[in-house]
Amino acid sequence: MRRWIIGARLRTLPAAIVPVGVGTAVASSSGLIWWRVVAALLVALALQVATNYANDLSDGLRGTDGPQRVGPPRLVGSGLATPVEVRTAMLVSFGVAAVAGLTLAAAVTPWLLLVGACSIAAGWLYTGGPKPYGYVGLGELFVFVFFGLVATVGSAYIHQQEVPTVAWPAAIAVGFLASALLVVNNLRDRPTDAESGKKTLAVRMGDRRTRVLYVILIDGALVAGSLCALARPWAVLVLGAGAVAGPAVRRVLAGAEGVGLINILGRTGATQLVAGGLLAIGLVVPT
Image 1 (cartoon, helix red, strand yellow):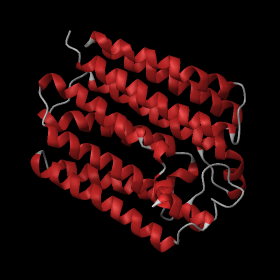
Image 2 (cartoon, rainbow, N blue to C red):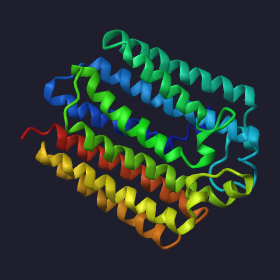
Image 3 (cartoon, rainbow, N blue to C red):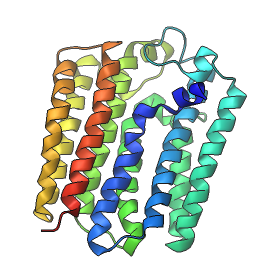
């Protein structure tokens, strides 16, 4: 069980939890259907875990996750599991997401089937397939779209089949936070990714500009989240997450690298959770 927990990459799960929480908070003023909240959370978590297993499988087969890699071990690259085992875990996780998504589509709208199919495809094609988009520097963009805009707006839409205007700045904030998590992860792996030919955005931009991008995403998330206060004043609470983000931002700008970025990755995940939680509270509190 421990190896599958390692492969699930628990530190990345805030990227799945936060958009559902924030999107649900957006819809709270119109009334919530609680089983749909649970189903949306199950879809998001299962997609995140499935994508992590897919990434582990593809990178392991391509030789990207070799013994020289810094950070937690990968299942295929380190030999903790066979490719067949990881592929099975990936398919089971995608299957769980599909079943929960089908339930929501049956209750809400068949259009959710298309959204789900695109999300599954995006999860697999990140590092899988003949031309993985994660290998050409588009990972952060897809994370912003699917774990920011789609997941947040979708989590609001499933309750009343409408999207309040306030959902969009909230979704942008969530997307920036999710992208920041991937940026710092790729910053840590930049040297080994460059050697293996994996041209992530961090490899393409270089060390210094990647660090600046990380800061822009963190600060941009707090600014975008605070704009929700124009409709729901208590959303300004999201700025309190700056206290959590501050140490990570300073260490990134100071040049932390390698093993030093592992703790920053955890701090970034904590920033996601705190910012998402404060934003969700602010969106729920009546004016």
